[in-house]
Length: 440
Image (cartoon, rainbow, N blue to C red; front, side, top):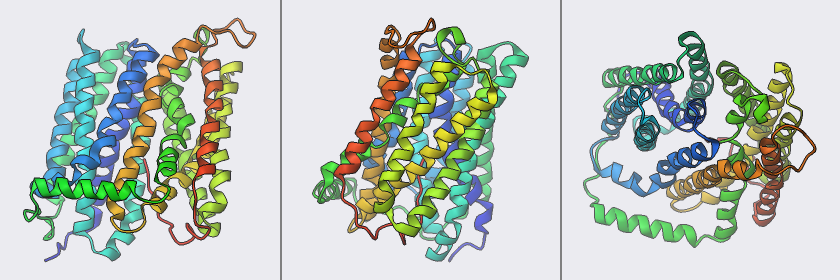
């Protein structure tokens, strides 16, 4: 019997809880470690590993089906995230904070990726097909609310606490303790308001060995799809410029002008990236969806690839001229993020396109794993690349050239995006009816 409890009572909180740890692990950690004095090379390499649970989650997602219910997994992972994030807060002021908090963040990433599997599965089991379609916009909206909170609100709070407490470790410890308390409260809330779906039962008819065999067989069908290798290259390299930028933009914004950065405060970075940047990203995605709905993916692939790559030049210009005007910094970031949001629409719709056919759900999971891998590997190398380029004096300037050189190398990497766009084949009609595009 279907629950009479309104989806409005749990969908908003469920998808804020799904998005917030992703942004806490992959965005907050970057700025936190830089503010704690960790070098760009170490920060990028070690935080890059935090993507790994999202890369490999298709490999254990079938086993979530056979061990307890989706609701049980959701509650357990939220409780575990409360503990792991509270541990981060307690470990921040210690001498071993870097290695210890990295371990906690990796656990949080694993719990978050598992929560994604269970939450999305629960959503499909609890709601009818009509309700799933009706609430898809709501779940996406509240996932994006989590993005604003994780990349903007919490960063601005950390900046305020840095200034008021005069203690950077304690400021960030307070932020992560707040997030931990949120997850404790959300666990208790979902314990009360998350319905027990009748269809939400472990699939005991499948053994672990059988699931492993089925998984292997499904992966074989994935790699046997026509054009699979050009598709995999597209998944790995289409976002290469952004994958390199994402680990170095925040360090660039907070680095002193003497070090080649823009010298922003933590609060200002939270506003630039988490408010202005996120709004631009969402607007770009909306406009991109409307454009593809009118003319299809094939017609818009190249314009969107150019939109995703060419605005990276704004970071080159910011690094070369180091403007003091906060308005122009915001304008540059807004333009770059709008272009990225517009161009990212083509990427997500291509994943849906390539996943079509038998086993489309499993094939889409493999596509998102390659997507995460495409962000993970370049991100790990970004800090090391910046370190190498720091010693090269390519442009005439008395200032350090590390960020200038790095962002120009990012521009060169746009060639990889263009190459993989040229390699993939897309039906001219695809995209006019597929209006639902979702992503991280």
